[in-house]
Length: 75
Image (cartoon, rainbow, N blue to C red; front, side, top):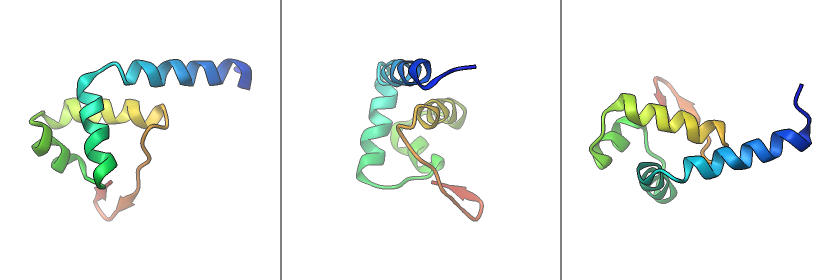
C-alpha cells in the first residue's frame, strides 16, 4: 500500500518524465491555448492517433491534463 509520502514523489517523477518528451511539450502548448480533441491534435502535430492517445494517457495519469466527455468526443 502506498502512503501519501511515497505517492507524491512518484507522481512528481512521472510528471518530469512526461515533460522530457518534445511531443508532449508540443501537445501541452496546443492544449494550453485551447481545448482540442484527439483528432484535432493529430492533425496539428502530424502524428497518428495511437501515439497521441498513449501520450495523452500519460498526461492524464500525471494530472497534467484533465478530460471531459461531450457525446462521443473526449476533450
